[in-house]
Image (cartoon, rainbow, N blue to C red; front, top):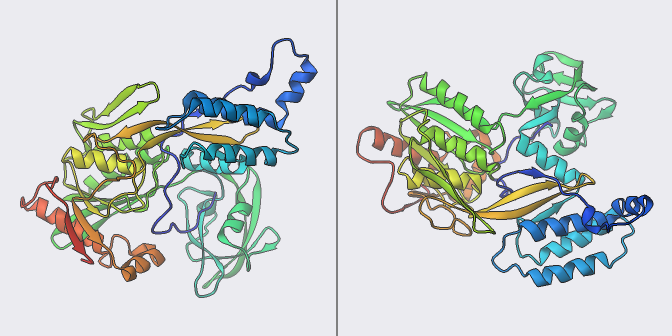
Length: 440
Protein backbone atom coordinates (compact mmCIF):
# COMPACT_ATOMS: atom_id res chain seq x y z
CA UNK A 1 0.00 0.00 0.00
CA UNK A 2 1.12 3.55 -0.56
CA UNK A 3 0.34 6.20 1.96
CA UNK A 4 -0.13 9.92 1.82
CA UNK A 5 1.83 12.15 4.18
CA UNK A 6 0.52 11.43 7.65
CA UNK A 7 -1.68 14.18 9.11
CA UNK A 8 -0.86 15.84 12.41
CA UNK A 9 -3.91 14.34 14.13
CA UNK A 10 -5.76 11.15 13.35
CA UNK A 11 -9.11 9.94 14.51
CA UNK A 12 -8.74 7.36 17.27
CA UNK A 13 -8.40 3.79 16.14
CA UNK A 14 -11.20 1.37 16.90
CA UNK A 15 -8.81 -1.37 17.99
CA UNK A 16 -6.29 -2.07 20.67
CA UNK A 17 -5.29 -5.62 19.94
CA UNK A 18 -5.99 -7.66 16.86
CA UNK A 19 -6.33 -11.27 17.93
CA UNK A 20 -7.51 -12.84 14.69
CA UNK A 21 -10.14 -15.50 15.21
CA UNK A 22 -12.65 -17.47 13.18
CA UNK A 23 -16.04 -18.89 14.07
CA UNK A 24 -17.85 -21.71 12.31
CA UNK A 25 -21.33 -21.08 10.97
CA UNK A 26 -22.62 -24.37 12.31
CA UNK A 27 -24.85 -22.67 14.92
CA UNK A 28 -27.66 -22.42 12.37
CA UNK A 29 -27.22 -25.91 10.98
CA UNK A 30 -29.38 -28.44 12.76
CA UNK A 31 -28.37 -32.14 12.89
CA UNK A 32 -29.88 -34.28 10.16
CA UNK A 33 -29.91 -31.59 7.47
CA UNK A 34 -29.15 -32.79 3.97
CA UNK A 35 -25.86 -31.60 2.43
CA UNK A 36 -27.78 -29.47 -0.07
CA UNK A 37 -29.72 -27.67 2.68
CA UNK A 38 -26.55 -27.15 4.73
CA UNK A 39 -24.73 -25.73 1.72
CA UNK A 40 -27.61 -23.35 1.01
CA UNK A 41 -27.64 -22.06 4.58
CA UNK A 42 -23.86 -21.69 4.69
CA UNK A 43 -24.04 -19.57 1.56
CA UNK A 44 -26.98 -17.53 2.84
CA UNK A 45 -26.45 -13.98 4.15
CA UNK A 46 -28.06 -15.29 7.35
CA UNK A 47 -24.88 -17.24 8.04
CA UNK A 48 -22.88 -14.00 8.43
CA UNK A 49 -25.65 -12.49 10.57
CA UNK A 50 -25.52 -15.46 12.92
CA UNK A 51 -21.71 -15.53 13.02
CA UNK A 52 -21.71 -11.95 14.26
CA UNK A 53 -24.46 -12.63 16.78
CA UNK A 54 -22.62 -15.67 18.21
CA UNK A 55 -19.33 -13.81 18.64
CA UNK A 56 -20.99 -10.90 20.46
CA UNK A 57 -22.95 -13.32 22.64
CA UNK A 58 -19.81 -15.19 23.70
CA UNK A 59 -17.26 -12.38 24.04
CA UNK A 60 -18.71 -8.87 24.32
CA UNK A 61 -18.08 -7.00 27.53
CA UNK A 62 -20.38 -4.06 28.22
CA UNK A 63 -21.57 -2.43 31.41
CA UNK A 64 -25.23 -2.64 30.38
CA UNK A 65 -25.21 -5.68 28.06
CA UNK A 66 -28.69 -7.26 28.19
CA UNK A 67 -28.44 -10.96 27.32
CA UNK A 68 -32.23 -11.39 27.08
CA UNK A 69 -32.52 -8.49 24.67
CA UNK A 70 -29.66 -9.86 22.61
CA UNK A 71 -31.40 -13.26 22.42
CA UNK A 72 -34.51 -11.54 21.09
CA UNK A 73 -32.34 -9.71 18.54
CA UNK A 74 -31.15 -13.07 17.18
CA UNK A 75 -34.69 -14.28 16.59
CA UNK A 76 -35.58 -11.05 14.84
CA UNK A 77 -32.46 -11.09 12.65
CA UNK A 78 -32.85 -14.72 11.59
CA UNK A 79 -36.55 -14.26 10.93
CA UNK A 80 -35.80 -11.86 8.09
CA UNK A 81 -35.17 -12.66 4.44
CA UNK A 82 -32.03 -11.06 3.00
CA UNK A 83 -31.80 -10.51 -0.74
CA UNK A 84 -28.10 -9.62 -0.67
CA UNK A 85 -25.04 -9.56 1.58
CA UNK A 86 -25.19 -5.76 1.71
CA UNK A 87 -28.69 -6.00 3.13
CA UNK A 88 -27.41 -8.39 5.79
CA UNK A 89 -24.49 -6.07 6.52
CA UNK A 90 -26.90 -3.20 7.12
CA UNK A 91 -28.95 -5.35 9.51
CA UNK A 92 -25.78 -6.33 11.41
CA UNK A 93 -24.66 -2.73 11.80
CA UNK A 94 -28.13 -1.72 13.02
CA UNK A 95 -28.15 -4.56 15.56
CA UNK A 96 -24.71 -3.64 16.92
CA UNK A 97 -25.90 -0.10 17.66
CA UNK A 98 -27.97 -1.41 20.58
CA UNK A 99 -24.72 -2.38 22.36
CA UNK A 100 -23.89 1.33 22.82
CA UNK A 101 -20.22 0.60 22.17
CA UNK A 102 -18.54 2.61 19.39
CA UNK A 103 -15.64 0.15 19.23
CA UNK A 104 -17.69 -2.98 18.50
CA UNK A 105 -18.31 -2.73 14.77
CA UNK A 106 -18.80 -4.72 11.60
CA UNK A 107 -16.27 -4.44 8.76
CA UNK A 108 -17.14 -5.30 5.18
CA UNK A 109 -14.47 -7.27 3.25
CA UNK A 110 -12.69 -4.13 2.03
CA UNK A 111 -12.65 -2.52 5.49
CA UNK A 112 -11.44 -5.77 7.06
CA UNK A 113 -8.62 -6.10 4.52
CA UNK A 114 -7.51 -2.51 5.19
CA UNK A 115 -7.56 -3.05 8.94
CA UNK A 116 -5.52 -6.25 8.86
CA UNK A 117 -3.01 -4.56 6.55
CA UNK A 118 -2.69 -1.66 9.00
CA UNK A 119 -2.14 -3.83 12.07
CA UNK A 120 0.24 -6.22 10.30
CA UNK A 121 2.51 -3.32 9.38
CA UNK A 122 3.08 -4.85 5.95
CA UNK A 123 1.78 -3.80 2.54
CA UNK A 124 1.77 -5.25 -0.94
CA UNK A 125 2.65 -2.53 -3.42
CA UNK A 126 5.55 -0.51 -4.78
CA UNK A 127 6.44 1.41 -1.61
CA UNK A 128 5.95 5.14 -2.12
CA UNK A 129 4.36 7.73 0.11
CA UNK A 130 2.22 10.10 -1.94
CA UNK A 131 0.77 13.57 -1.58
CA UNK A 132 -0.89 16.19 -3.73
CA UNK A 133 1.45 19.11 -4.43
CA UNK A 134 -0.31 22.24 -3.12
CA UNK A 135 1.17 24.49 -5.79
CA UNK A 136 0.71 22.33 -8.89
CA UNK A 137 -2.14 20.05 -7.70
CA UNK A 138 -0.15 17.14 -9.15
CA UNK A 139 0.55 13.76 -7.58
CA UNK A 140 4.05 13.69 -6.12
CA UNK A 141 6.28 11.26 -4.26
CA UNK A 142 6.88 12.29 -0.66
CA UNK A 143 9.46 9.55 -0.26
CA UNK A 144 10.09 5.97 -1.37
CA UNK A 145 10.12 3.43 1.44
CA UNK A 146 13.47 1.85 2.29
CA UNK A 147 14.27 -1.31 0.28
CA UNK A 148 11.00 -0.99 -1.68
CA UNK A 149 10.60 -1.59 -5.44
CA UNK A 150 10.24 2.18 -5.86
CA UNK A 151 13.52 2.88 -4.04
CA UNK A 152 15.35 0.16 -5.96
CA UNK A 153 14.13 1.66 -9.25
CA UNK A 154 15.61 5.04 -8.32
CA UNK A 155 12.36 6.93 -7.68
CA UNK A 156 13.09 10.00 -5.56
CA UNK A 157 11.22 12.38 -3.27
CA UNK A 158 9.73 15.17 -5.36
CA UNK A 159 9.18 13.08 -8.48
CA UNK A 160 5.72 13.70 -9.94
CA UNK A 161 3.69 10.76 -11.21
CA UNK A 162 1.97 11.54 -14.52
CA UNK A 163 0.47 8.14 -15.36
CA UNK A 164 -0.17 4.83 -13.61
CA UNK A 165 -0.24 2.20 -16.34
CA UNK A 166 -2.28 4.02 -18.98
CA UNK A 167 -4.28 6.24 -16.64
CA UNK A 168 -3.40 9.95 -16.21
CA UNK A 169 -3.15 11.06 -12.57
CA UNK A 170 -4.07 14.72 -13.06
CA UNK A 171 -7.49 14.39 -11.39
CA UNK A 172 -6.71 11.50 -9.05
CA UNK A 173 -6.84 11.67 -5.28
CA UNK A 174 -4.04 10.11 -3.24
CA UNK A 175 -6.43 7.30 -2.30
CA UNK A 176 -7.30 6.53 -5.93
CA UNK A 177 -3.65 6.46 -6.92
CA UNK A 178 -2.78 4.26 -3.97
CA UNK A 179 -5.46 1.75 -4.96
CA UNK A 180 -3.91 1.48 -8.43
CA UNK A 181 -0.41 1.01 -7.04
CA UNK A 182 -1.44 -1.74 -4.65
CA UNK A 183 -1.72 -5.29 -5.86
CA UNK A 184 -0.59 -8.84 -5.35
CA UNK A 185 3.10 -9.40 -4.78
CA UNK A 186 4.83 -10.26 -8.05
CA UNK A 187 2.51 -8.32 -10.33
CA UNK A 188 3.76 -5.26 -12.21
CA UNK A 189 2.71 -1.65 -12.70
CA UNK A 190 4.16 0.91 -15.11
CA UNK A 191 4.66 4.54 -14.03
CA UNK A 192 5.35 7.64 -16.07
CA UNK A 193 7.10 10.27 -13.96
CA UNK A 194 8.73 13.65 -14.36
CA UNK A 195 11.73 15.00 -12.44
CA UNK A 196 12.67 18.70 -12.64
CA UNK A 197 16.25 18.07 -13.74
CA UNK A 198 15.68 14.93 -15.81
CA UNK A 199 12.41 15.35 -17.67
CA UNK A 200 9.88 12.58 -18.27
CA UNK A 201 10.84 8.94 -17.71
CA UNK A 202 9.11 5.60 -17.23
CA UNK A 203 9.69 2.67 -14.89
CA UNK A 204 8.05 -0.73 -14.52
CA UNK A 205 7.83 -1.86 -10.91
CA UNK A 206 7.18 -5.34 -9.58
CA UNK A 207 5.00 -5.19 -6.49
CA UNK A 208 6.31 -6.77 -3.28
CA UNK A 209 5.42 -7.19 0.38
CA UNK A 210 6.87 -4.21 2.24
CA UNK A 211 7.33 -3.48 5.92
CA UNK A 212 5.89 -0.04 6.59
CA UNK A 213 7.98 2.24 8.81
CA UNK A 214 5.81 3.52 11.66
CA UNK A 215 8.69 5.04 13.62
CA UNK A 216 10.74 8.04 12.51
CA UNK A 217 13.74 9.23 14.52
CA UNK A 218 16.82 11.42 14.46
CA UNK A 219 19.30 13.25 16.71
CA UNK A 220 18.59 16.94 17.33
CA UNK A 221 21.00 19.37 18.95
CA UNK A 222 19.07 21.61 21.35
CA UNK A 223 21.56 24.02 22.91
CA UNK A 224 24.02 21.91 24.88
CA UNK A 225 21.67 18.91 24.83
CA UNK A 226 21.71 16.10 22.26
CA UNK A 227 18.14 14.85 21.99
CA UNK A 228 16.95 11.61 20.45
CA UNK A 229 13.59 12.46 18.88
CA UNK A 230 11.24 9.58 18.01
CA UNK A 231 7.78 9.87 16.44
CA UNK A 232 5.65 6.71 16.55
CA UNK A 233 2.68 6.77 14.17
CA UNK A 234 0.92 3.58 15.31
CA UNK A 235 1.46 0.32 17.18
CA UNK A 236 1.70 -2.16 14.31
CA UNK A 237 3.18 -5.66 14.54
CA UNK A 238 6.58 -4.23 13.54
CA UNK A 239 6.50 -1.22 15.87
CA UNK A 240 8.45 -2.89 18.69
CA UNK A 241 11.32 -4.10 16.51
CA UNK A 242 11.56 -0.66 14.90
CA UNK A 243 11.62 0.96 18.35
CA UNK A 244 14.36 -1.37 19.57
CA UNK A 245 16.52 -0.51 16.56
CA UNK A 246 15.90 3.22 17.01
CA UNK A 247 16.78 3.31 20.72
CA UNK A 248 19.98 1.35 20.10
CA UNK A 249 21.02 3.58 17.19
CA UNK A 250 20.29 6.80 19.07
CA UNK A 251 22.17 5.71 22.20
CA UNK A 252 25.18 4.93 20.02
CA UNK A 253 25.17 8.60 18.95
CA UNK A 254 25.78 9.83 22.52
CA UNK A 255 22.43 11.47 23.11
CA UNK A 256 21.52 12.73 26.56
CA UNK A 257 17.77 12.20 26.57
CA UNK A 258 14.75 11.15 24.51
CA UNK A 259 11.54 12.80 23.33
CA UNK A 260 8.96 10.20 22.28
CA UNK A 261 6.16 11.77 20.23
CA UNK A 262 2.80 9.93 20.47
CA UNK A 263 0.67 12.84 19.28
CA UNK A 264 -1.93 11.71 16.77
CA UNK A 265 -1.08 8.05 17.40
CA UNK A 266 -4.43 6.17 17.36
CA UNK A 267 -3.07 2.99 18.94
CA UNK A 268 -2.91 -0.52 17.53
CA UNK A 269 -1.76 -3.80 19.06
CA UNK A 270 -1.81 -4.38 22.80
CA UNK A 271 1.33 -6.50 22.80
CA UNK A 272 3.24 -3.89 20.79
CA UNK A 273 2.57 -1.33 23.52
CA UNK A 274 3.67 -3.77 26.23
CA UNK A 275 6.86 -4.71 24.38
CA UNK A 276 7.74 -1.06 23.84
CA UNK A 277 7.06 -0.16 27.47
CA UNK A 278 9.53 -2.87 28.51
CA UNK A 279 12.23 -1.17 26.46
CA UNK A 280 11.91 1.94 28.64
CA UNK A 281 11.01 0.42 32.03
CA UNK A 282 13.17 -1.94 34.06
CA UNK A 283 10.49 -2.78 36.64
CA UNK A 284 6.87 -1.99 37.39
CA UNK A 285 3.39 -2.80 36.13
CA UNK A 286 2.51 -1.71 32.59
CA UNK A 287 -1.20 -2.46 32.27
CA UNK A 288 -3.94 -4.70 33.66
CA UNK A 289 -6.80 -6.17 31.60
CA UNK A 290 -10.14 -7.53 32.89
CA UNK A 291 -12.51 -9.60 30.73
CA UNK A 292 -16.22 -10.50 31.00
CA UNK A 293 -15.58 -13.53 33.19
CA UNK A 294 -13.57 -11.43 35.60
CA UNK A 295 -10.28 -12.72 34.28
CA UNK A 296 -7.56 -10.37 35.48
CA UNK A 297 -4.15 -10.25 33.81
CA UNK A 298 -1.28 -7.89 34.60
CA UNK A 299 1.55 -7.13 32.19
CA UNK A 300 4.80 -6.09 33.88
CA UNK A 301 8.25 -4.86 32.95
CA UNK A 302 10.76 -7.73 32.88
CA UNK A 303 14.15 -6.09 33.44
CA UNK A 304 14.88 -5.75 29.72
CA UNK A 305 15.02 -1.94 29.49
CA UNK A 306 17.35 -0.66 26.78
CA UNK A 307 18.10 2.73 28.31
CA UNK A 308 18.03 4.70 31.54
CA UNK A 309 18.34 8.12 29.90
CA UNK A 310 15.70 10.77 30.71
CA UNK A 311 12.49 10.50 28.70
CA UNK A 312 9.71 12.96 27.86
CA UNK A 313 6.56 11.78 26.07
CA UNK A 314 4.39 14.06 23.92
CA UNK A 315 0.64 13.33 23.79
CA UNK A 316 -2.53 15.06 22.64
CA UNK A 317 -6.27 14.45 22.36
CA UNK A 318 -5.70 12.09 19.44
CA UNK A 319 -3.30 9.83 21.34
CA UNK A 320 -5.49 6.81 22.01
CA UNK A 321 -5.59 3.18 23.03
CA UNK A 322 -2.09 1.65 22.97
CA UNK A 323 -0.64 5.18 23.14
CA UNK A 324 -2.47 5.67 26.43
CA UNK A 325 -1.24 2.35 27.79
CA UNK A 326 2.36 3.34 27.09
CA UNK A 327 2.01 6.91 28.35
CA UNK A 328 0.13 5.77 31.47
CA UNK A 329 2.73 3.13 32.33
CA UNK A 330 5.65 5.53 31.90
CA UNK A 331 3.92 8.28 33.88
CA UNK A 332 2.66 6.14 36.78
CA UNK A 333 6.04 4.45 37.21
CA UNK A 334 7.85 7.80 37.23
CA UNK A 335 9.82 6.85 34.14
CA UNK A 336 8.83 9.82 31.98
CA UNK A 337 7.41 13.32 32.04
CA UNK A 338 4.24 13.57 29.94
CA UNK A 339 3.84 16.84 28.02
CA UNK A 340 0.95 18.08 25.87
CA UNK A 341 -2.80 17.60 26.25
CA UNK A 342 -5.05 15.03 27.90
CA UNK A 343 -5.27 11.91 25.74
CA UNK A 344 -8.38 10.58 24.01
CA UNK A 345 -9.66 8.16 26.65
CA UNK A 346 -10.13 4.70 25.12
CA UNK A 347 -9.81 2.03 27.80
CA UNK A 348 -11.13 -1.09 26.09
CA UNK A 349 -9.59 -3.95 24.13
CA UNK A 350 -11.05 -5.35 20.91
CA UNK A 351 -10.61 -8.74 19.26
CA UNK A 352 -10.89 -8.85 15.47
CA UNK A 353 -12.65 -11.85 13.92
CA UNK A 354 -12.38 -12.95 10.31
CA UNK A 355 -15.85 -14.03 9.14
CA UNK A 356 -16.58 -16.69 6.54
CA UNK A 357 -17.09 -14.24 3.64
CA UNK A 358 -13.88 -12.29 4.45
CA UNK A 359 -15.77 -9.56 6.28
CA UNK A 360 -14.82 -8.94 9.91
CA UNK A 361 -16.04 -8.04 13.37
CA UNK A 362 -14.21 -5.99 15.97
CA UNK A 363 -15.73 -6.75 19.37
CA UNK A 364 -14.87 -5.32 22.77
CA UNK A 365 -13.64 -8.17 24.98
CA UNK A 366 -11.95 -6.52 27.97
CA UNK A 367 -11.10 -3.28 29.74
CA UNK A 368 -7.62 -2.14 30.62
CA UNK A 369 -6.25 -0.08 33.49
CA UNK A 370 -2.92 1.72 33.96
CA UNK A 371 -0.80 1.11 37.07
CA UNK A 372 -2.73 3.81 38.95
CA UNK A 373 -5.90 1.72 38.61
CA UNK A 374 -7.86 4.74 37.37
CA UNK A 375 -9.85 3.88 34.26
CA UNK A 376 -8.62 5.51 31.07
CA UNK A 377 -12.01 5.16 29.38
CA UNK A 378 -13.42 8.65 28.73
CA UNK A 379 -10.81 10.07 31.12
CA UNK A 380 -7.58 9.73 29.19
CA UNK A 381 -4.11 10.33 30.59
CA UNK A 382 -3.49 13.79 32.03
CA UNK A 383 -0.06 15.21 31.16
CA UNK A 384 2.35 16.27 33.88
CA UNK A 385 2.89 19.49 31.93
CA UNK A 386 -0.07 20.72 29.92
CA UNK A 387 0.76 22.82 26.88
CA UNK A 388 -2.19 24.17 24.93
CA UNK A 389 -1.69 25.13 21.31
CA UNK A 390 -3.43 28.14 19.81
CA UNK A 391 -5.61 27.58 16.75
CA UNK A 392 -2.94 29.12 14.55
CA UNK A 393 -0.30 26.79 15.99
CA UNK A 394 -2.56 23.75 15.48
CA UNK A 395 -3.27 24.79 11.91
CA UNK A 396 0.43 25.31 11.18
CA UNK A 397 1.47 21.91 12.49
CA UNK A 398 -1.45 20.16 10.82
CA UNK A 399 -0.72 21.64 7.41
CA UNK A 400 3.06 21.22 7.76
CA UNK A 401 3.76 17.91 9.56
CA UNK A 402 7.49 18.37 8.97
CA UNK A 403 7.43 21.16 11.59
CA UNK A 404 6.61 18.69 14.37
CA UNK A 405 9.58 18.22 16.63
CA UNK A 406 11.16 21.56 15.61
CA UNK A 407 11.46 25.03 17.13
CA UNK A 408 8.10 25.86 15.50
CA UNK A 409 6.44 23.26 17.74
CA UNK A 410 5.65 24.68 21.24
CA UNK A 411 4.92 21.30 22.80
CA UNK A 412 8.22 19.88 21.59
CA UNK A 413 10.08 22.95 22.91
CA UNK A 414 8.53 22.41 26.35
CA UNK A 415 9.54 18.75 26.20
CA UNK A 416 13.13 19.80 25.53
CA UNK A 417 12.99 22.15 28.51
CA UNK A 418 11.78 19.26 30.68
CA UNK A 419 14.70 17.16 29.46
CA UNK A 420 17.16 19.94 30.23
CA UNK A 421 15.72 20.24 33.74
CA UNK A 422 16.15 16.50 34.30
CA UNK A 423 19.64 16.55 32.85
CA UNK A 424 20.67 19.30 35.26
CA UNK A 425 19.11 17.44 38.18
CA UNK A 426 16.52 20.15 38.86
CA UNK A 427 13.54 17.89 38.15
CA UNK A 428 12.50 14.26 38.19
CA UNK A 429 10.41 12.36 35.59
CA UNK A 430 7.22 12.30 37.69
CA UNK A 431 5.70 15.65 38.63
CA UNK A 432 3.13 15.85 41.47
CA UNK A 433 0.50 17.96 39.70
CA UNK A 434 -0.18 19.07 36.12
CA UNK A 435 1.02 22.51 35.09
CA UNK A 436 -0.90 24.50 32.48
CA UNK A 437 0.96 26.57 29.91
CA UNK A 438 -1.11 28.28 27.21
CA UNK A 439 0.67 28.75 23.89
CA UNK A 440 4.16 28.34 25.30
